[in-house]
Length: 407
Image (tube, rainbow, N blue to C red; front, side, top):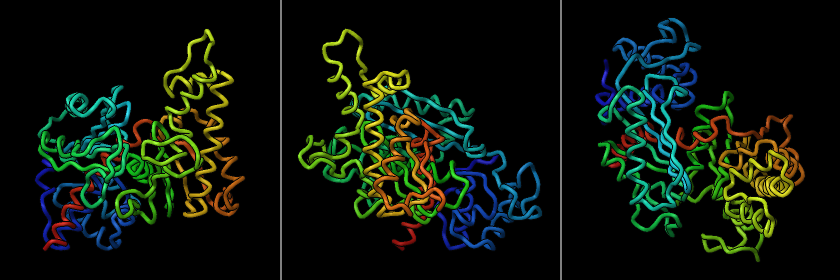
């Protein structure tokens, strides 16, 4: 069986670089030649010739064994059986999720580990747990740690795209000097990379959950914090210091609650999980009934018809829609996907969000008849971890680009 680590070393020259780029794209998702050309930004001719070479080398084949060169651009190209595991980790505030996938398998064929308690516990306590989760997820694939070829990490904070480190000022739950991706990479013996979890949610949605060629995709992660991942023209928009998409720190109430970022009245202080739970607990003060202690329990009560919880969730949807209307007027996206814990409220949050969007945004920006779509994430609680898995594989390609620039 092929050992994929042998094929992911540094590439020299345009031909080798293109070959590696296409191989990585197939590892991320089996796809048609047309799809590979769109995702790699290479010409159809380059993709066709490279796929033919990879097929002759015994690395890839057309779907169900049909020769990819004979079946045309509509046949999916996939890896032949090979030894290689890609790992994605989402280290959230209050939970940790690990996904592991053999890269010769479909993107939905993954092993999953999930634990309560995340970065808020502090790195010394949570990292041993994450390592155990990675080992368990990789073992479930039938391969071992030595077969891991990549690791990506999704974190709920701003990450500088130039250095891969937390953008200053480093905000809680992180502290100056924290480097979770580097720590995991040294332990596994691979180059590990990290990015903001909303960014990676957008990457996962565009890669695995959309069938159309959307020009601009926005992913909203609404949980303890509120973030937006932005993809425009197949490119993840991070901004100069990785601060692009920090919608949670838009000021909605200039005289409102002080945010952990040092601002006042940020969107995160209005519809973040902690604020929503606090609203409900204050409204139910003095009642004999149990009160929710998490966003998940609050949403469960809203689905059950609890008047206070229902009102809080619906108001959160309206407020989110107001913030998104400003984003729509600025970026005019084709697609907005709502993820994170708040998305578990489904129509209870989506309907008022849509109503607020239609009321506050320019009509042409949010008109469904023009192709605009607002929907819930189909990847659900695995979205950010799946995006991290894609990021880890893409890092092999970016490493070649960096070496080429240095040369």
